[in-house]
Length: 341
Image 1: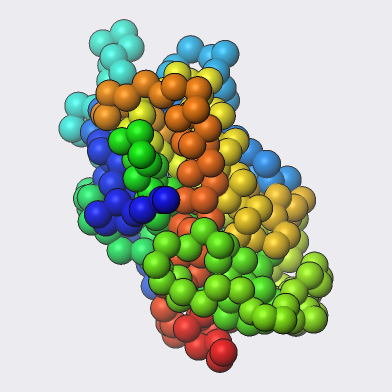
Image 2 (image 1 turned 90 degrees about the horizontal axis):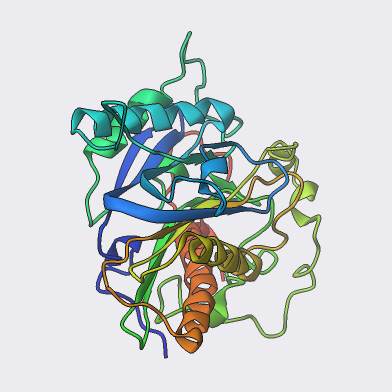
């Protein structure tokens, strides 16, 4: 039976810290995951409209095997500046691979679209994301808030506010798996217009309400175009107008190819938590990090448990992000907690 880590956060994976920076007026923000030591990394992109930085180097056939940080940001393509802020903070600390006498921090990044969410995006000549990235890196810690914060500040999710979510799982092998997700999908994380989460079978305790599934299922449970019937919701629906970006992490010892497989498996969590997902309008992406801090190299059977846990943990993180969303001035959509049973 799966159980959570002590924090039920991605930082239960030893060697990771998370920092958030938010701008309430902008209704956007940045989340960064810092690695105490360079972590083996991979990525899998399944959405049709991704926005990324430094993802090509993560493919198993390319030379760089480890990264120093990963960034999730709002702001659409403007948000890719956030990685430069994180990179600057790491360089100040002397962190990075030495190349020709220079220190170069490796900081892959991915963004979500939160431009049309009611926030003031009139930022002048330069977007604020580089500064927000720097701030997020300076605040990174093992204990962090989630919900309406960081990259989840302005997230939307099919008629509800989205948010930043996290979860962890302890496996019988002694390995820990953690997930972090900025949840801003085209699809819905709840069954129709109910309070019930699609990811209910994977919930541990009552971490996102403890409601299970509705019985009987509502008539609108499988209506894919449910969100487009709402005028305000439809404003979010353009190519690249959504996206859930996430990180799956473990303290197991993995190769770069195995980290890629971990990222692939974590996308199963998207499928179990969001309906529909991986659409042409979403830039859905999962980064994978393996810190190796447990020292455990998995057997074939234990590896299957790891990949199964990756999907389940990701589904929980996605649901927790929406469950924890908080109301703010100028919101287009209500928060989950306001939805009646």
